[in-house]
Image (tube, rainbow, N blue to C red; front, top):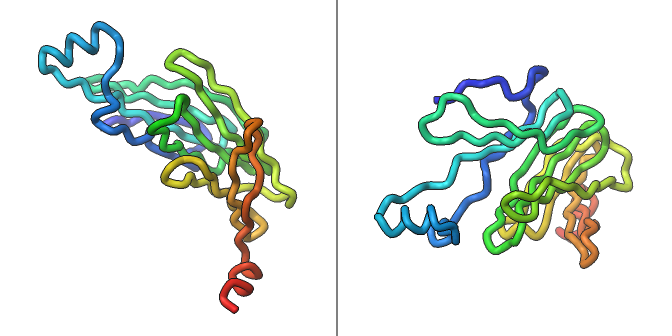
Length: 179
């Protein structure tokens, strides 16, 4: 069991690292190949991402057999981080995490490669409201964002890497669909 302070002001959102298919656990490094050949299976390091009242998005690694997790700040928002969600990255060349905040923005954080740094694309909805929840589709190509406008904005990444709304779900759209 690990007990640690992730954010001094409080944690609002947590998400476990993306799921990994057993067949995708192999690596081209000589060390991992020799461990695999010797029959010593090395499971991936447990990871989670957190967001808190300190405005930070943090990545945590929980190595097997170690008491203290390793923390890394991915970035910050301008106000409390309300939620974080790790994207299922099976088949993608990069990792993605979404975060949303009281600062009325959502961000999609991307890390290219093993040693790459985290960069983000900011999403600001037409409605100027705090954002409270983010959730990825199962295949990781769409992101749902909800906030203080009582709507769910379904977003998709375009060819230039920008996120655009493909659908807005609210009481009116549900009522129209049922007629």
